Length: 134
Image 1 (spheres, rainbow, N blue to C red):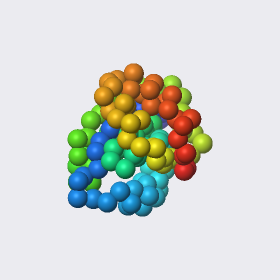
Image 2: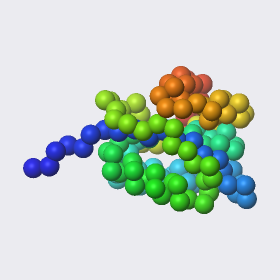
Image 3: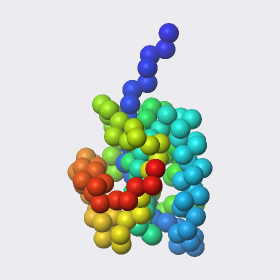
Image 4: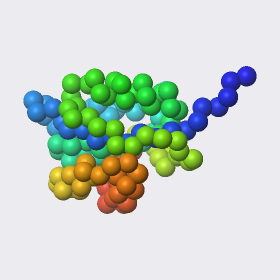
């Protein structure tokens, strides 16, 4: 009998590669939703036209594999994992992968400069200001 996988979270920020237009983000999220659902991963991706901040939750091994793919994805540069660790309960159980576009770069720039749990708390506090498409 296998033990249930412990729930984990990863919060990272990155920047859109310079030569890419911002408009394919919706298509990327559509494909990611299918893949993430199969891996029991939920989360929220916020994009401000230049920066990504994504908070993911799910089984640790699935999250680590996903982060390896994200770090190797040429559409992202300056990928920085800000926080990773165990999680007691899901924060995004209402949808698989939500997408929100931030109003201007200032909100995400503030998240990008923080570290660890302070960055996660700041990001979570901003959630109510996002128009989330889940």
